[in-house]
Length: 91
Ligand code: SF4
Image (cartoon, rainbow, N blue to C red; front, side):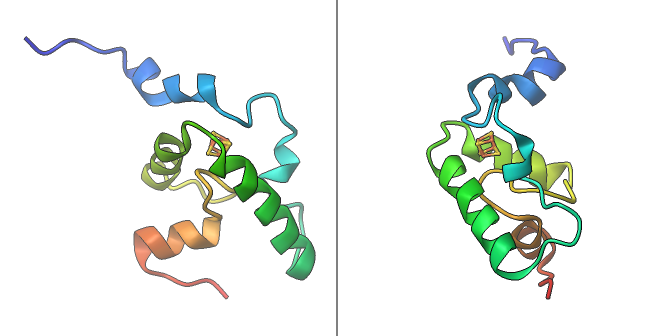
């Protein structure tokens, strides 16, 4: 028999094990007007955290499925998600 699941836990349960839990979200989200080298540096810092995160797969899937428009999720920036999901490359 198929077990019944709590949809809220199923959707968000992975966050309990997130490596970024309690961290300043500014590592993952771009401040207004951020560009160039500063942006690349911040995104690489976020990716480094995500690479060591035990829940990067569900995090990345959540961001893709819910079309998160901003931030690094699962090690992918918003531009990379657009490319993965929509095949659209941002400039
Ligand atoms: S993959 Fe990155 S953004 Fe997602 S929960 Fe882990 S550390 Fe946070």
